Length: 360
Ligand SMILES: Cc1ncc(C[n+]2csc(CCOP(=O)(O)OP(=O)(O)O)c2C)c(N)n1
Ligand SMILES: [Mg+2]
Image (cartoon, rainbow, N blue to C red; front, side):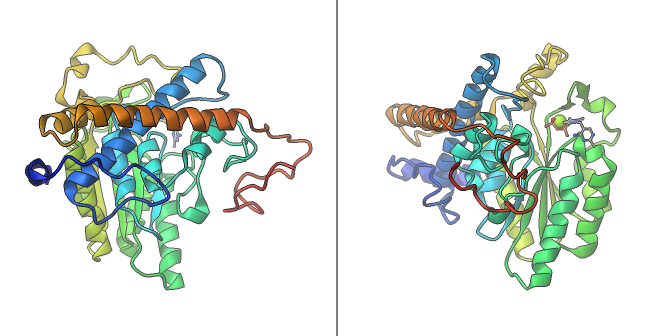
């Protein structure tokens, strides 16, 4: 638990957690306080990136929608951080933090948003539908709930091939949990006993629909037992709790326990997309404990426990800005798709899992 981590961290030297880098990858065996700091840095990078994307969108420089994960970064980063080589990740629209922690390069994000032909979807798909099948990051199907079955099928295929020691983690919103395909996927996962963790983020809205118009059960986690899952609830504004609960769920399925359902509570701290001002969210809701900003809460923990000093925090912030600026500047120089001249495919056939070649 973070409490332990916090106490341990106090007696340690104030060293910076290793910089988020895909060259080294997440250190799965890192002590809890190092992992907390590493997770914080992915969250910071994500917030920086998404703020920049919002600003580009407002300036008319992005085609299509921008959907951000503000307020959900702690849950999301924990989803990506504990997965290992060979594991399957099925992120959704608010999972940039998890995608980055799992290994998605920033350049692939900016290339997709800015419509570069060199991006993973060749500049031809919805900004948030990108994925890397070869790297086990599934490309998101828009139809909510469908990714559970896709993930279950992928895990079954791996089992049939004789792969060992793999797990899958699929993300879902509380709105998506109310679809028929979600129920089918969950049922199949339990029947087949695939090593699956489903992380449901209840951000209290699906578009403008609040929880009381979405479901009538007491608590969404109560459904776990009905599906044949083990279920856990989580304060998604608390990074330490996210790392503990989601990390433990991943460990449990890896050890052969039944599929796991984690339900995290947060507030979506943005509109559904940047076209939506979320004016329907009452002030009273914004004052609830689940409405805390997980990034601010995590930073406060770092300051309170003196995990790193202010100078280091400032350096991390600058570093995040520099990484984002570099990825945007690079993607802005790149060519757009030319539909009439190119063989038309994003990921689904010949190009599946290949990175595109240079444009000419
Ligand atoms: C089956 C289906 N119905 C409707 C939609 C349209 N849709 C896209 S996002 C969204 C809201 C999803 O809410 P939730 O699952 O709570 O996720 P959040 O946006 O809050 O992260 C809806 C209704 C869809 N993509 N798929
Ligand atoms: Mg929601």
